[in-house]
Image 1 (cartoon, rainbow, N blue to C red):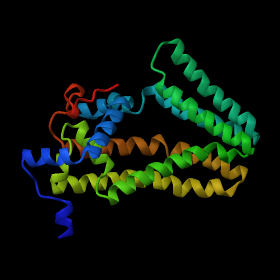
Image 2: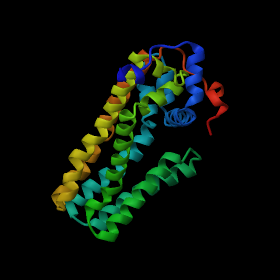
Image 3: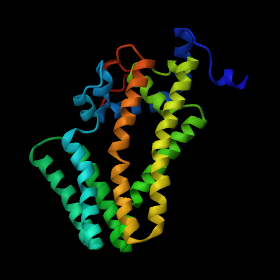
Image 4: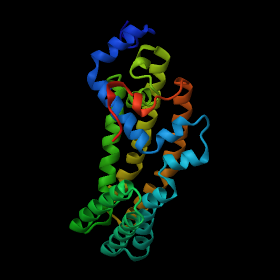
Length: 264
């Protein structure tokens, strides 16, 4: 009985519209998540009929975006492994992030991703320099993974899966998917799969952080790289296949999204 209450059978258009109007918070959150997905490049992957390598690369930020994501951490790993010098390792890592940002500014290309990376690297560097411990260069990432994991798990437990909210508005379905039991269950499962990604990172990285040794710090830097794009990219593809299978209609264009909110 409880299952039927939370997972209603398919409703007509009027009932679906009524559900949308009764959940303004969910609608606003879904639209925001869909906009964020499009701005991150996910929109290009979803809009295509097949997940081309170019679309996937774009969804991951492009070649430059991947380098901006990977190189600072890789430089830290190499320098710290051979020197065990925290200020030197952090200084060179931050310098790499600064160079990427400057190149974007000089080239008059969008700086959002590089600037976000620079801020993240800079804050992490500050934590590590204050404590003098190399492992604190990763504390911000650990807390970020914990926040994502908590948000995803809570959304599954309260039966408003975040991936479903994002996919619904990205594909022009709004909240109607919640009225279809099969779609609801798939979105729950997909959201839980993303939760497992962040939970796995925590499961591996937190013990290394708590070890407080140079060897563990190097291992922490390595696992951050290995559990970053190499895990994120395949899961992104799985998400594409699932979303396209559940929402086969043509994605809604930004100009016709519900509530009239346009992309910034």
